[in-house]
Image (tube, rainbow, N blue to C red; front, side, top):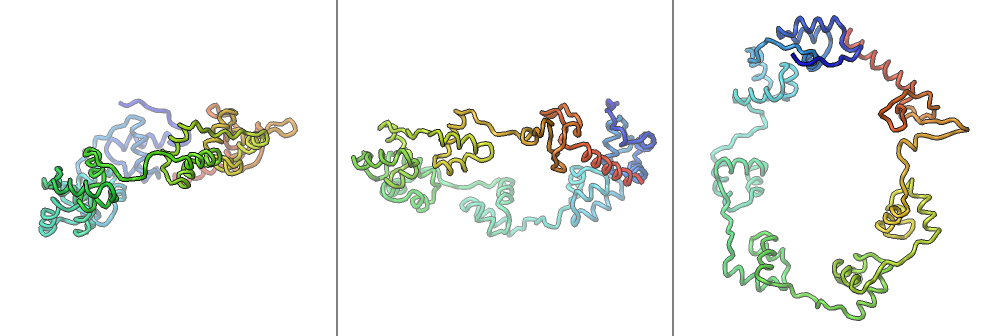
Length: 358
């Protein structure tokens, strides 16, 4: 027998447990449900915790099979499982063995199979799915079961290499991939292995560009400077590193005081806009100053005229600490709700359980 667990007082009475011990072993679960007013899942869970086992066989009766055949095509499996008192997994397995299928399920016709055999080796699964009116996953799964394979050439012909060599320096790579009928990554990898390079602007920096970079670097981001100069962000950061340029804008006392004042109630993005600085710069200064936001527990506590108060999360009222129950699991050692809100919630729950029993 399984180990008995602690039964919460007020849930299952002794009469109910005796009824459970008397009827459950013979498989009379529905009678227990009708007499106690509890769900079938609750009855089974209580029987499991106490260690009661049923001697009823798990075979499907004729009534259950008729109900399954009648409802399976139209009703959801979860609803049928609730009516029969069986799990969804066992219900679906039985339906599969009986050959039952939902109305939404479409069988593959000979015409569909012929189209799949003809198009799958050369066309994409998404194109075939659109023609057949089926999802691409169903097309792939059916092709895998039939043993179909795609016939995509993995080698590069001499004509393709000549065309790649001719177009790659000046043409857009995506356009080349579309012309060759190959993926973009494959074209890039082949061009890299063959040693083809794009014809772009020279790699050296002019004196005018260096002057503009030195002027814009302290107050602008790398992406903004890249847009002004016409180079990539990586090129801007590398050139700034070589020229030993740094963001040397010092923090004033006014800015630091404003940051300390506003940080607990605002995000770093809003602070960056208010101070006119970048978000990483603000975050770095916050970590250096050791600033921390107030926790939820700290926000809900205060001291008024020497009396410690706490805000109830239910009624949102400030009350003295003696109006809250003790809770060791909480950070401040007090419950989240006040005594009045907790009392109302327990009374409401008790009335609901008594109504279900009656």
